[in-house]
Length: 415
Image (cartoon, rainbow, N blue to C red; front, side, top):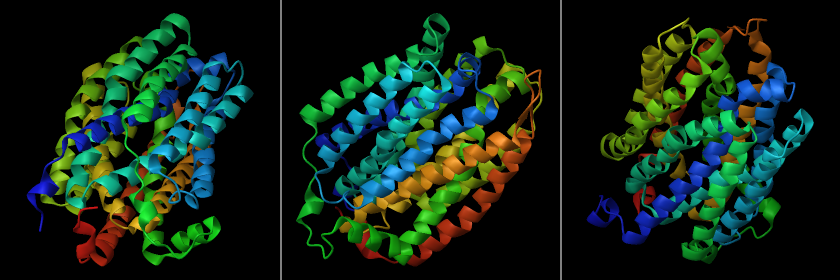
């Protein structure tokens, strides 16, 4: 039964949610800024669509590898220390991106950024599961995902503006400056998160700890579902700006307005979806999001030249579907691992997300063909792939929920 203490947040919990949301804002912005900067970055660094897809996927591949390597150690240290270590590396990698003079340098910089930045999301999810009961996690995930909207409202439009004024390097310098603030707040105000260190565990060896997590049957289902959920989104994302400008015929000067309007809408969507997830059921909310996503992605990827208002409405509804899948799925996944394996599970799960997404981005770069006038062919194929993966994950998430979560009373207990 959900108690009053499970429903309400303490003052410190509210602070942690705000801090994690701000942290995610910097990480998401670093990743999301690549797509809108693509139109300016590709000619400047002499990259074609396939090379740009490789640059985007380089982050994903390196993040996936580092997540696997970190999984054996993820439950052996204070999560605050883990967070600070990887965040410092993320800042360094982003600084390298800001100074990139060539395609090769940018590729190396994205690898460094991914090696550190890709692990941070898993640490954030582990902290969330450590500090919040399952009955709270939908709302927590919803608030944290407002970072995505904030990057749309503030980060990407500002990034595009300063890119137009000072060049595409400037947004990366902006991210470094904002991230330094978040790092200082974490260092000074976040309390140690070491409750998992007090749990007696059988495997003290890092490799054995990772192996135990990987070989757990219920965890494998979670990893597979996460991998499939990542494929479609990573296929569409790298070429979103190019598609909007060259296929939908929206001018570059109108792009910030699209991100602004979509972001304003989604900053309200995240908390609402989180609350709905906790109130009406995480699986039901996920299924709703899957249906909305499938319908809107097919419509979007088959659009031709369109009015600005139409593009903004379609993008907003698509993000309703995305958030309605993302938030409840993250909350459900957080219920799968036992506390002693939580960090390791989250790290490997993040790796599956990044690696499968990286593969998807590379494949998308070869599926999409850019004509001399900039028009992208076969973009609709990417949409159909997403529909297929979304359909499969609906059945997978229902299986995971019914077999491992719904009937396990222990997952409802406070951490």
